[in-house]
Amino acid sequence: MEVRKLNSNVSVLQPKKKQSPNHNHNNHAKKVHRRRIMMIGIIFVVILAVFGVQIFNSHRTYANTVQQIEISKQKLAKQKSMQSDLKLEVSQLHDTNYLEKYIREKYMYSKPGEQVYNLPDDAKTITIQK
Image 1 (cartoon, one colour):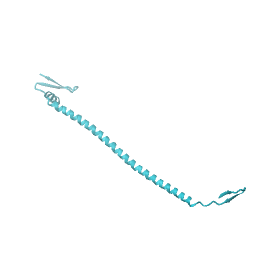
Image 2 (spheres, one colour):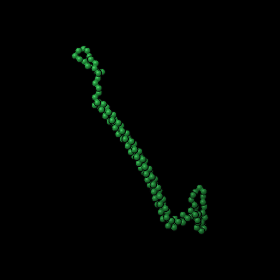
Image 3 (cartoon, rainbow, N blue to C red):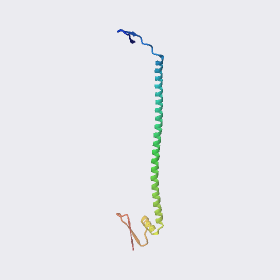
Image 4 (tube, rainbow, N blue to C red):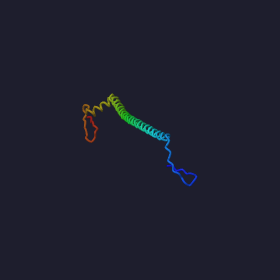
């Protein structure tokens, strides 16, 4: 109910006017806009979640690949040092003095007339010539 005042001290009650169809249309338009914004928001969140998962998976794959590369580099460095040690040993084996010493130590050979003593405390071999 709407209250109207006249020029006098008495006020007269009159019924409210019906809402215009335009007002009802505005409420419907607001509801539609809210629904559309909600749907767009939900779709946006889903898209962000999908891309987030893909980024996380690619980052994890990248980290695993980097780790494998580091392990491979360490293995390569170890193999290179082993190869250089073997090359050094091959070049030393061409030297007759080193070869004789190596055969004596490894295979316990001796020259004729030599006596070889192995001591338990010392890993070295002592050779005495007569």
